[in-house]
Amino acid sequence: MKLMVFDVGGTEIKYSVMDEQFHMTDAGSTPTPTESLPVFLDTLHRLYLPHRDQVEGIALSLPGIVDMDRGVVNGGGALTYNWKQPVGPMLSELCGCPVHIANDGKCAALAELEAGSLKGCRNASVFLIGTGVGGGLVIDGKIVQGRHFTAGEYSFVLTDPDHWKSIHDMMGSTCSTTGLLNLYRAMKGLPEDEPINGKQLFERYHKGEAEARDAVQEFSHMVALQIFNLTVLLDLEKVAIGGGISRQPALIDTIRARVQDVFENGPSVLCGASFPPPEVIPCRFSSEANQVGAYLFYRK
Image 1: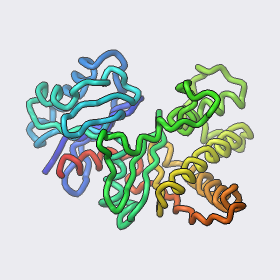
Image 2 (image 1 turned 135 degrees about the vertical axis):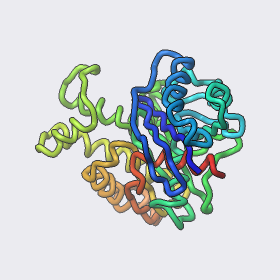
Image 3 (image 1 turned 60 degrees about the vertical axis):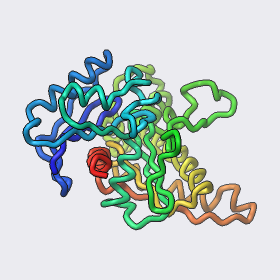
């Protein structure tokens, strides 16, 4: 079975025609529309049309709290025009084919559980570092959805008790690529709107720039603290790091080192508590995990 698969992020939409072996053909990307839901749906429709005779339907990974049963985005995520909208049924009507939509973090978790880095795990997690933070939880060998489809929504975890009403003090703001870049700008004394992306930051990191290295260290420590918290709650065996930035081995290595430090030297040790650290690994499917998971959810 071949499907048209879309991975909608806050910055770009990645797409491909995917088969049962997860082979991707006619793959590409386009900027994510910022204007409105009709423009968003029209963009997907135009990308789908050249392949409509090749595929049986559309599998869609996207940010937000997604009611997979009804195809509705209940809120959250960077694309505010999707909030409370039946994105799945609307796209199905427009394209004239079956459409299944799912949360991006849960898509990545399903991909890694069934065919990737988390295969065989009982309790594990996917931590997607992108425009926000995507999450997916594996508990007792199954993807956790929750009654309201909110399980694993790490982005909304509050990180500052003194500023808990601010959107800037949620995990999605501090532990995302956006957060890393904001941290770097602050360390460099750059304007908040100074254009820079993750690739450029790591180019400076590998050239030995002090601020780039300090930003990656501090950012990795913040991610490590959240991995510790999740492990205390869920006894995680593995945490798979995904998102485009996960292609940077230096980031994975630094997060892994900071996780080890938190587990060996954190306050829990002083209390005599022993929490075995989870293995920190990159997602097998890297930035393609969302597309693979969307395919698998459609097939279920």
